[in-house]
View 1 (cartoon, rainbow, N blue to C red):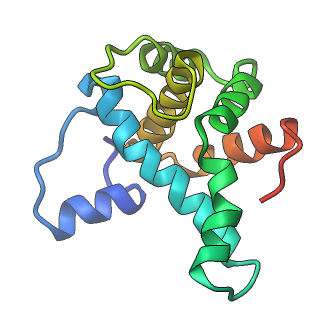
View 2 (cartoon, rainbow, N blue to C red):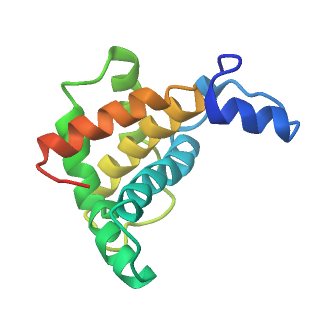
Length: 146
């Protein structure tokens, strides 16, 4: 990870964490953190629309969290990513899964995991600006507004 770049580096320093080589993380580990990054962005945008009861906030954000929606974003970004980012997407999509998708097809689940792996990788390498750029492009291409 690059030194002194963003929230991940701040967390490492403040909590005395040992720095890891993110390039060696499994795609499912990257997707684990990427899921959180994605949710934080979606929830932030929903909350910024105004104060509402939590149930309404959840209903507004849940459409963006579905594997089918994430698959659409994944597909919209395929021609927007760098070679390095495409490699992360490929690794995420081909990861060996130990669970089954509950409310999604296998393809939706694999595509959503690939997207989350990319977001996790970018976040952990201090490239949050790129995360936001890609999500904005993906949502625009899918004609979805947050």
